Image 1 (cartoon, rainbow, N blue to C red):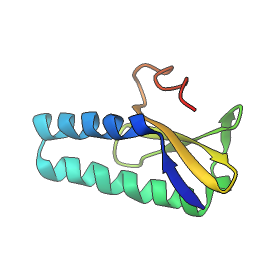
Image 2: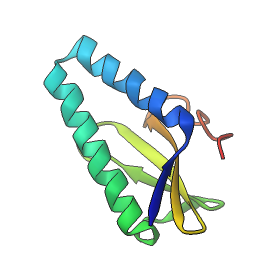
Image 3: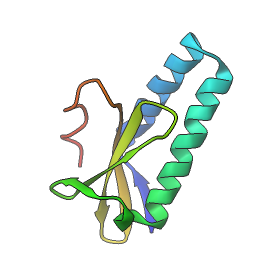
Length: 97
């Protein structure tokens, strides 16, 4: 399926990477980004393998990092709406379509 990122997802990722660069290393930030890309690609390949959490939204947890992303299937596209921390602001990004 085609992959579409909500425009604000880029700022979500930038903010997370800046945090890892500031508190860890560039390698840690790169590892986060590589894992995120891998899971996003997997969601695009097999979107229905991830369970629906609420309404038509699906959640994908990262393995190594305490982050996840939420996506929905829209026609022939997987639309990633938000990337967020597992323990902070559970409503963050839920208004995005």
